[in-house]
Length: 103
Image 1 (tube, one colour):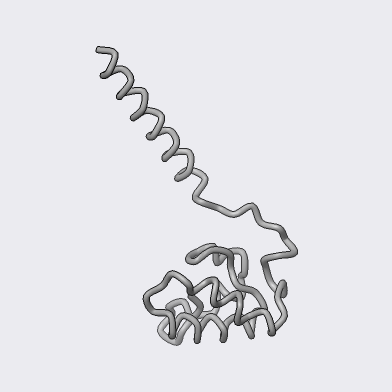
Image 2 (tube, helix red, strand yellow):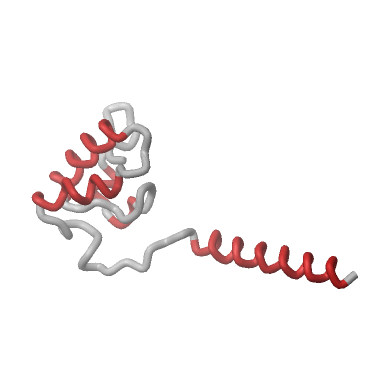
């Protein structure tokens, strides 16, 4: 009985931890000077796009479009995916089909 109770407590702890992380959405505590419109110089785009595209299996197109977007918007969102709301220009630039242009 003690093992069952310990197992249930462990599962409850894991569930609470997972829910808390998911509820926060994995959001970044953003430093307004570090991210957002105009937060980069064009010379910084390459490094930030390398970071952004690091984990994708489509690295070449990701880097191409990320650099294109960064040179126009002068910002790259934090993380490897998502978080585009931090950079409205990057988020709102669309292809002619209406899809997102920036990775």
